[in-house]
Image 1 (cartoon, rainbow, N blue to C red):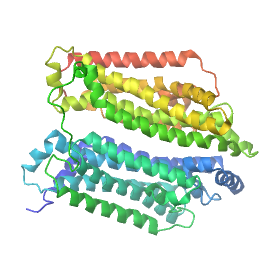
Image 2 (image 1 turned 90 degrees about the horizontal axis):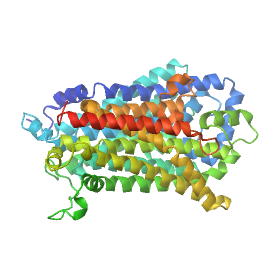
Image 3 (image 1 turned 90 degrees about the vertical axis):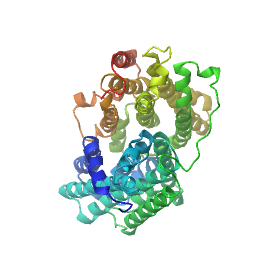
Image 4 (image 1 turned 180 degrees about the horizontal axis):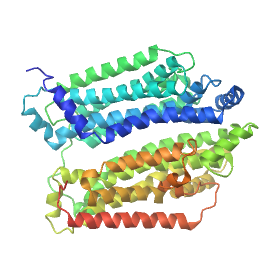
Length: 531
């Protein structure tokens, strides 16, 4: 028996377990650039219109920080690569991270890896299967991208280069996730480390595209941009992405040889022999479990908010008398002044990402339940509903804190440039907090599934992805307003710069309350570890 014996069987098992979510990931990754190409061809049919848009983009560092540079504005393909590369590569990276950690570290944490190891399966078959599934998923997404982009009439070479850059980023983060899975004993921590690396790569790319170009070369996301699909392709960059992925997988293999099954290379801290008085309630326990993740999210949003807030003043140069661009930005970001539109767009994006924290925190009870740590808590004098309610408080209050910090840092950074730090901080803080009810609806969906359909709790991530796509691309793709209104984010006024009637906030809060109440009631009546 070799170290890879049984890999094929485990690949089939992983595909069986992910038969619902994995096709959704792949189709979304493939569909976004294809739909973007179609929309750009319709909105900018003339080369002169595309060139005007490209000149405006390249004259503004703030927009380049958000979407990257445009290398060939005259062609539909060049603008498609500009608009779709960032979001598609980030999605490929996230898909790869979640896949690898789910089928490696999460299996060890749950004890299933030990059961698998009792069968005639090689020591490295489990991680090899996870890496194979992630690699094949990215490859399939790339093939669909090539077919879709060439079907839109775009050049074959550019389509292959674009697809290769997307798959290459996915492969790199497959390797990064394989490495982080060796470092820690928890799947949540492994996911968090890999996503933190992704966030750092995004910031390096954004800072580089805003002016300090050297920084972009430190990020795989920057390599994907600089592949220059449809604009004189640099084929060595996809090769560099693939080589980096191989090097990371080799590094993960070397690290795996230095640890035992279930252990991590980073030693776990020993806790005190007895619990402090502050841990005598379910809420206190939830806070103890959630505070590390909340601190990381809050710090990251403080930095990102400051970065984007400091770029807001330069957005005013974007229009430059171009009425068409002004109208496009108004459609994408809402009414009001251009800087207010910029902030409204960014805060909407912040709220969408914060939804990821809210879902993660609200679903923590499910992880505790599956790990067998719920029974000891509920064996004490603890009402059924109070245990998940403690984690829910962390999800609701934590998401509000994250958005508040992002709004404060963005407003303060912008205020420093315009000479009104206190006033701008308060103004943008209010606009950021206006996004909170929509995030709470997403947390409510997570609680509802946890209480009534625990086996389907992963589906809430599909809701988050769908809401994000409707918000980011709904208008560009001319999706029917009734479909876009299914997203709670669609009902939040585009603040700052718009009126804020109380009705949307009231209805969103009521919807969140109903979902939460139904979920808690369902949990109180179902068995633990119910499928």
